[in-house]
Length: 279
Image (cartoon, rainbow, N blue to C red; front, top):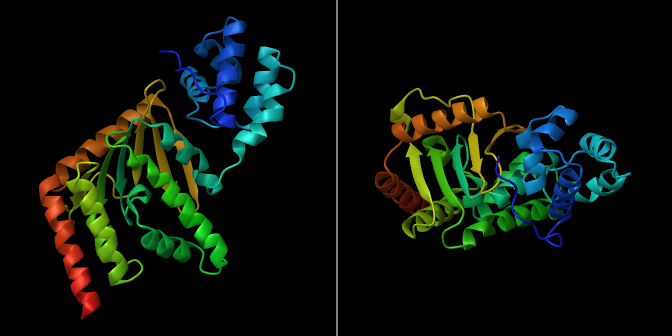
């Protein structure tokens, strides 16, 4: 297994813990697999902790201090790495997303978060929390917009999204919001910043009818898959699960419209929404 890249300890508490974990493990003469066995996790999980793609949980911090003889260093510091602007069930996935070199996502019922406009994100967050104060909604929207800044880089990460037609047909936030949202997706696709395919209703039954998929690849850590439900989410690094979900995603891309035809459909729907709004 390739070793993790050198991290800048000043970049985040998670990066600091990852750097210190690698140093302590190597000082103890343990491989990632050997340390994983003592923690009852995989060696790839240890690698993800060191690379900063996984968050250190208190139970692992306690075991690391015991196994590596680091006193209470990891227990004292894992709390800082746990602080996040994102909902608890999504925080670890959002942090991993920021480190990914490639993201492949199937969105079943809504436009993927990285492709959302502020108005669309606001409508989604308000639907999730209809009684929340406006300040809380704006905080969530700001966090989502900040996530999308990873697309400011001209080429990295690769983002390949398969969007179900249902997500495009559902008028989230109203016709004006949808017109703007679809124009934004189309603009990113036309600029070659993202690859977008639409899975049309005409495709019929498909391999991911039970939910969305997000696959993430990293330069120096094993791939992850993220499963999300209503108010829940979990990251998986089991190679068999990741392989199966990657195959599922490949089946989806085969059933979806081509990127060119998908772009034509998205732009036509944006025009329809705009026309209906003016009407």
